[in-house]
Length: 134
Image (cartoon, rainbow, N blue to C red; front, side, top):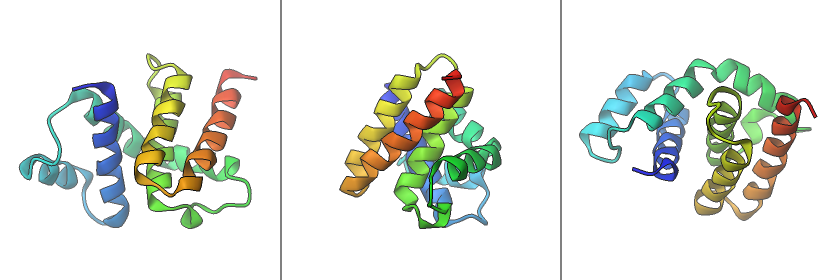
């Protein structure tokens, strides 16, 4: 499985979790594996589990950088993509920031409204520059 496919699976799991906040993440993963909408993949699991473990920090960073936007106003698709990409930017060091941002934009182009891709690109660019100390 390619990393792009792994990210897409991770996005789908995080997106599903956004509709079922009361559900245990492991149950959502197990259901995906059982109905074969998700394949067993270490990178997918690393992304999903790290994103969920660091969700509070990720959301604080998103709130800070999404000027004049509350997280509740951001579409669930864009928010799931943002959370996943911020996780990659901050906690998955072997992935270059430009790759994380590009993959997030591509996910938005595939699953979100047209304007979401540029919105996501802008927020992630700001966070990446801040993380790099620029």
